Image (cartoon, rainbow, N blue to C red; front, side, top):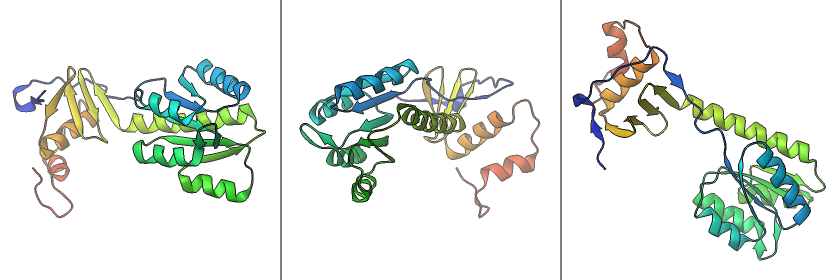
Length: 212
């Protein structure tokens, strides 16, 4: 579906443009073959309002991930049908997700291999469930802050700064670079009178070249 042409649309800018943090819940995967550990972590994550998919094998995990978006993964290394490190490397190639290793392998070389495979954090068993949940909450808070900084909502206009996309009433708006810069400028300064110099500084690059 082609996006809308901004030049043919009348847009009303609301007084308070909102920097939005997106959806409240996240999708998390737990790859753990110890049933009691699996059950305890899953319960705690769901209690926090998150969608959790629990798997005991790499095969099952890959099938689920292909069907659902992934935000965070808690992964054991010793899994019934393969090595969790190989799975983490595969996961890193396919998705941008936060990975926590949760394993009984507590030697320094094990931790080094975990981080080299692509893990963002490494927790050894026995472990504190409270500490694990605090680590997950800390990551999710950072993620929400990043979303908040990268998205603007003003009435029926939605702006995704990191993707450089704008939509009106759910339909994408086609913008030139200059139109994009002006739209962001106006949204960030609602109900303000901008001088000619302020506008020109916004649409020219660092070398003073006009950007269209």
